[in-house]
Length: 177
Image (cartoon, rainbow, N blue to C red; front, side, top):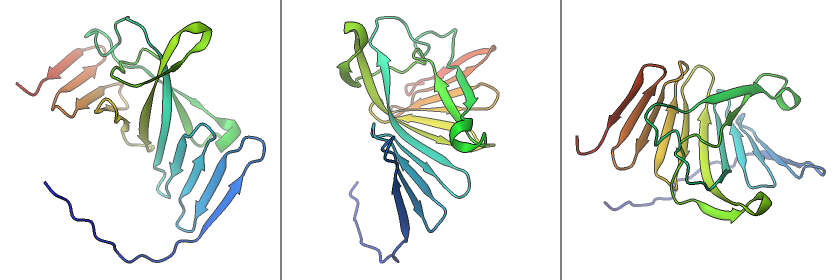
């Protein structure tokens, strides 16, 4: 399927840019209330006026031969949240995920600590209070939808789906039925 690209006329958008000399973070605030924070490590956080936060970052993970939560049908992904009061006055939360959260694939390899080999993968996280969080891993063509009750729905570009409901169980639907 072909796509045609057309240039659409747009109006200029006023932006304000500031750089922190100590952390080297770049903050951009647009006239439509959108705030962008770019960190020196390349991660980007975009906060929209309606409270939607889109984060793009590289995630480190040690390369091991152990089974991950995605490969084990008896366990699911755990999401731990803590308040980052130093940055946002306790209004927003930061997600922390354990390294065994079921992420597998062919990510970029980098040198790890103590001679070990770790991997990095691009992750895009979309969050909004009162809505399900969505984590997309473009290199692995997967997306994880995390609901408030702990249910995790994972989908791939091959039409494979997995619903993980704690403590009830796991439902897997594959493209071949």
